[in-house]
Amino acid sequence: MPATVLLVDDDPNVLRGLVRALRYQPFLLYTAHSAEEAMEVLKSRSVDVLVTDDQMPGMTGIELLAWVTKHFPEVARMVLTGCPTTDRVIRAINESRVFRFFTKPCDPVALTLAIHQAVEQKASAAKAGTAP
Image (cartoon, rainbow, N blue to C red):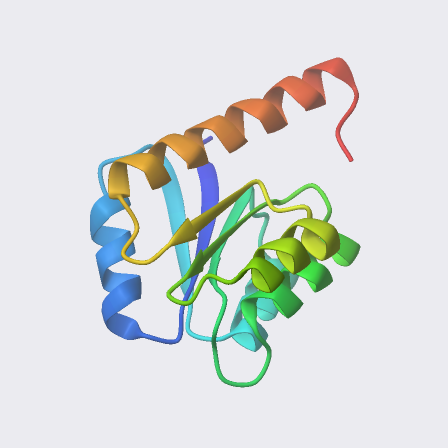
């Protein structure tokens, strides 16, 4: 079964670009245009990796990741941001234990590699019985 990846961004062009960058990877891709929409996907489908924009209307990506950490701790979490600040990075690490933090525009090869690493780390933890 392929790994499932949920991509979240309020900009449809960014979402299309991410899907295009990952289309040949062995992933089942889901997309959401808001944190609230992402929460509904997470409640209804199994997700291995979440990649979210930070700055979105309503709930921010960092707030979404904190919610995911509480409700779905097994999901690997990554952030994309166009406005990286030290405060955002610290919040992402402290509140959400993010796996990777990327700035926009994101290198698609680096993102693909990070998703593969997150999936491998999750599988290794599950085999060792140390998954969250």
